[in-house]
Length: 164
Length: 164
DNA sequence: GTCCCTATACTCGGATAGCAAGTGTCCGAGTATAGGCGG
DNA sequence: CCGCCTATACTCGGACACTTGCTATCCGAGTATAGGGAC
Image 1 (spheres, rainbow over the protein chains, first blue to last red):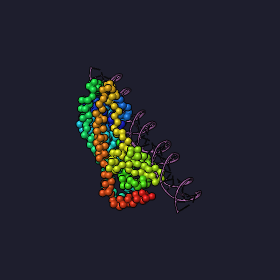
Image 2: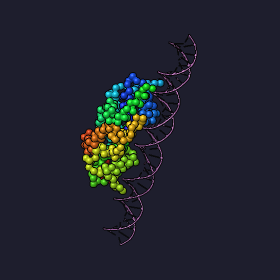
Image 3: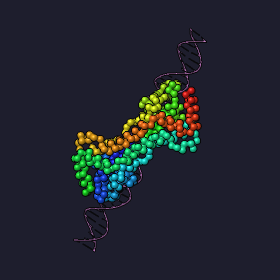
Image 4: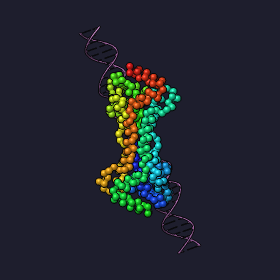
């Protein structure tokens, strides 16, 4: 079970975009890719997913780029995972119980399989945990635990990009 | 993010094997596959994983087959997931923070990335939830919620296989 | 009749193809800018 | 000098190959059984 690689980059991107004023020009995907050391083309694909999910907002044309579409406090890690990785459950019940020689009529299987329920319950715990962390939390954690020099370099770089 | 298909079959198999006495002959993979309506060859692969993990025990040769290797109460859904799907985390931190123009010396990144911590914490919640459910729980749930006719047909079939 | 031996049939185990989804890339549509031209 | 127009450069967006890992399959190694033969 592996999460899509794009999720990691998407979270990093969102936590950077949280520091970009809403009226400043958007940050192009090329700049975001360079800042994070990631392939620009694939990151573009990920950014599209964020836009479709209403997490990011894109400005087309020259001086275009990406902003957060809503407050960083209203963007959770779960939102990003669902946007990039899809919302399908990890465990998929194929109704094994309805197959084989011991099966009975399909009408007798109205309640979901107990095995599936157990797995979906675990996934709910996973999702609740991710939903409890917002981009604001990630940003605050960054400010306190990251080396100050990296913060300064990041701020300089961001300012240079925003000026353009 | 999708869990391996084999996990579902593995859990069903274990909950059936829980009803096979330890001194009875083992159940061959062909029988298990027929009972669950699953491809026998692929199920064999899954069974190998369960054996390697110490969840099932295999008897080779004629009259061979599979048993649970330990008490059903000591086998959790998490054990089966780890055995079949592997124990790697779904989220993999590629240390994006150490790349790009704002990075500083590698020595400054001793503590794990806050983003990775959040994801791993969510995965821990997932795993704890799965670890709280044992094969005994699944078996009891089966006995109470499954159509009695299916239980009877299953018992008959199992008896016929055990006699052989 | 009893014991032993051999051939057989059935089992697991690991090595081997096929396929789908995720990963990585590219080119086209659209827009703000900058420069040149006319008034 | 000011305003307008056009060409340009840069952006996002969707369509197109490739690779990795999961799915599915097969054949070989090993063992208990069943039958036949010798004593």
